[in-house]
Image 1 (cartoon, rainbow, N blue to C red):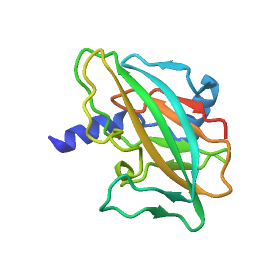
Image 2: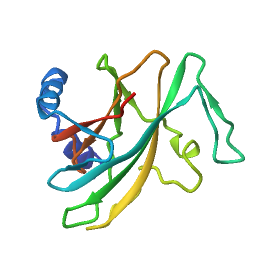
Image 3: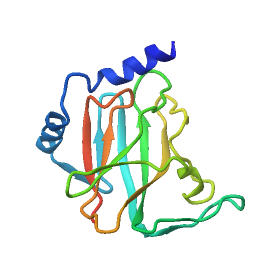
Image 4: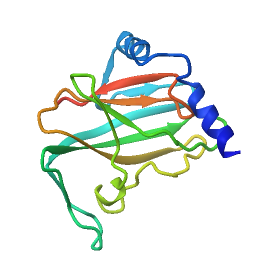
Length: 167
């Protein structure tokens, strides 16, 4: 059953090269912070994004602050509304892309480095017709700029749109 779930998740990108996906994304243009991005099963709004520097403060007394010797951290706050007919969960990681088209995945331990009581999009359920706010964190090289956050359909990455973060 688990293998079947992963197979379904992979189908959205199956058969397309990274270059083909990048060209499709570029053709769609980009959204700005605060704009609503609509997909058949969801709506996304990036509410805020910021460069938080080379040290992340932990929101947990048992977890140490995290420092990047040669990088910095980017924090993104966003909202997702589930427009499908059933409760959904996002299993694929979120991505940040810089101006050189380098892709970065979320920090594994991101839940410790977002504001206290903020939610991260791990195994969080998205009920039908409701919106939920989430936070995520990426570690990037110090010199990286011109960031874009990738939004997508809930079930797979067969439909995506980039949001310009403004830095």
